[in-house]
Amino acid sequence: MPIELDKIVCSFCKELYRPKTRAQTKYCSKKCQNDGGNKTKRDRRDGLKRNVAILKDLKIPRGESKQLTQEELVGLSFKGQFYSKKESVWLEGMKATATKFYYEYFVISNQGGVITIYELI
Image (cartoon, rainbow, N blue to C red; front, side):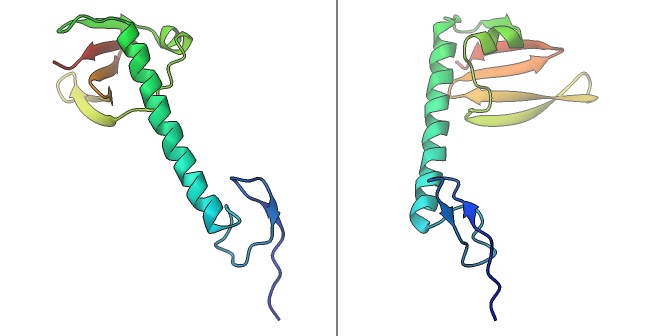
């Protein structure tokens, strides 16, 4: 006799459904799975575009950098989780690491609590 699984809510369409297998725990159908994945990608792409527009509005001259605090960036509606690339770098004689986040042709690094933004040449 097969075990009947409890009904759960689909992550995309929010409908109640009964999974057919134990692996089917997030989406009710392949269509919702595809639509949910596409929405995630679209949100990420749009978030990156907004971040780049915010960085462009700072009008940082080429070859120069600008220092801001985390609060100032958040106040500009900047969402740090949407970036193009992330890279770890060594600091202070190979004793500590920092992370550089790339937003298309802008780079943001956090060193000692101060956020430095510059544009790649």
